[in-house]
Amino acid sequence: MKKAPCINCFSPLHRASLCTLMFLPSKASAAMALPPSRSFSPAVSPSRRFRFRGQGHMPLLASSTNPSAMGKRATSCKPLSSASSQVVDDRDMLDPYDILRGLQKKSSPGDDADDNDDSTTLQKVKIPHPTHLSPTSLETFKKCPQAFFFLYILKLKPDPPITPELARGILCHKALEDIFDLTPEDRTLDNLQNLFRKEWKGKRGVRNSVASGEHMERLDENDDSQNDESYDCLFRIDDGRQEEYGSIRMHDMRNNDDDASITTSSYDIEEEIKWGQYSLRLLHNYYQLEDPRKVQPPNPLMKEMWVNAKFNLNANSSMDDDDDYNDDNHEEERDNNPEESKLGRDSIIVRGKIDRIDMHYDPSNNKIHLRIIDYKTGKKPNFKYSPSVNERIANEQFWKMKIYALILWKMILRAEKMNSHNYGSADQREGYKYGIPWMFRQKLLQAMDETRDRQKWSEIIELHSLKLVYLTSHADDASLGNGNGGGGGGSIGPARYLDFSLGSNPSEFQSILDEMQNEIESIGREIAEMVDLQDPKAFQHCDWKYCSCHEFRRRFRGDTVWSREREGGVEW
Image 1 (tube, rainbow, N blue to C red):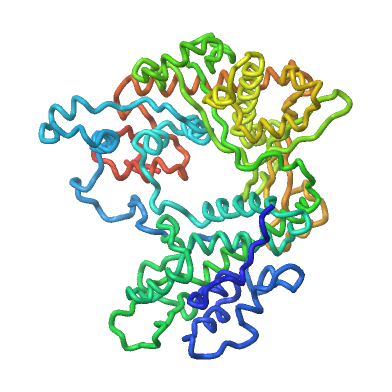
Image 2: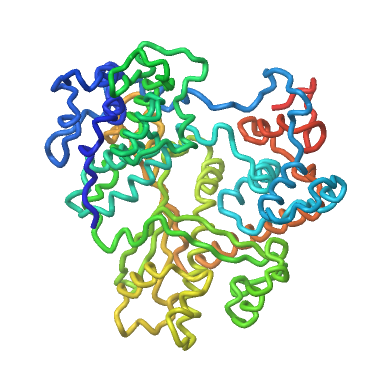
């Protein structure tokens, strides 16, 4: 078990950031931004603020905070042009084939003999078949083929690369993962929230600091936290304006205020604090829904576990055909001849990361039940519509999780196949591409007694259910009843579960997996067919006005990508 995170270890060189990391009111943050020669008030002393394990903790939220504004994105970094933006020079617009040429050169840096021959280069460039997809990318294609083309074939990145909402999700997931590395008695709310602060400290780096070389060297010597480039755009003030407490000016450690080399980056610290307070509130909600101190070993069985499986795109294929474990020699041949594998055209690999897997033993059927758990920092859907609409919304929420269930089950079946062969060494068993991770395998074996070790795993293990853990919900959700569950006032509701059963019998379970497999293979074939057309305009956009396809499309030249003309020539 790891030690509980010690927030007292922050370097004194980062005094201007301490209260921000604690997500205290902005005036307190400004008071912290004093030169080191001045004494700190006990009320804002870092050593007092960062007490831990029963020594007291800061209030979760300031009473003046407006919860509805906490999730508001303060700034953006180089936003994409919109319909109301200035007219962009056509020479600055993008072309899909230019991007593909760049990707080709990046993947084959030594092949630049024909760099100056435009016609030859144009002939070489092809739209590639995606070989590795994720549940998210499959869902993207299902909703909008053009967004899939931009994001997963042209590899375009959103601008800014990360939003406050996305950053919150990543950091909350990390805190909820790391809390289970502590002993049960150390899994307190204080520790959970400090894990979030610690992770954010590493991502945000040192902001509003002096840009002089000597100063940055001193920072490096005392603290290993550096700005993550993708997170650097968060809460940045782009127009040069600084509110009274919107950004903090940190004095040079030498107190040389007249040094012309001193510069100050501008960040909206007030928005960062509100964002942090909202994030801590989500973790507070989780803690009231599930007390991690009461989660006993072996749970969580696995955390942040990568899963992957191969899917054949040929019609009438079965689950056993996908992983090719019926012909090991043929698999080795394909590995040695990747050009003949046709990966991406005839088959795809789907992979992703499962947040958490729990298990429990069911004495009624003598089986080990597994449950896949996924954390959501967004709000639980408000099922206030007709039964059919509510059912559709619920199915959409669990669509990606059913893909994870299918992949995990395929990996378990593969482990079963491996157990049925007499392989000579552990290295051979571990060498399989699509088997379950070694740690997961060992934990499952520990849960089985010796007499059951040689049984088929599908007879011992049962994928029982899926669980979505929403860290907040709509305050007016009728399912919440009269109580607020400790979620607080305003528009922030308490955390809630959403469960999905994977069938009450083996036949039902197999039917759910078969349906999911057929849908994945159908999407894979549709992607392959569009790529075979070798025309960017084959990927058509959706009509959802919030889809990223509309912002990306405005950056492309002329008719290089498909665009539906709307009444009056106006697009979403």
